[in-house]
Length: 81
Image (tube, rainbow, N blue to C red; front, side, top):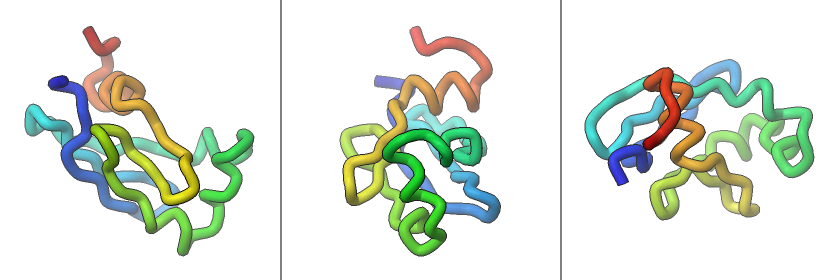
């Protein structure tokens, strides 16, 4: 899908640099998620840096992920079609 994530890199202050498969790029802020359930583990900077792309989603080794539609909406400013 055009909103799938192609590349992700960890940035300072719990932000992620993201590139979508259509070439659009932006920054996604994970800070609002860090006090919620499974995302609390991401407060560990070493673990946060283990971010990667799995099946178009931003993911971490213990199963945390952010749907590509959520990333798309944040970067593009509109809901994924």
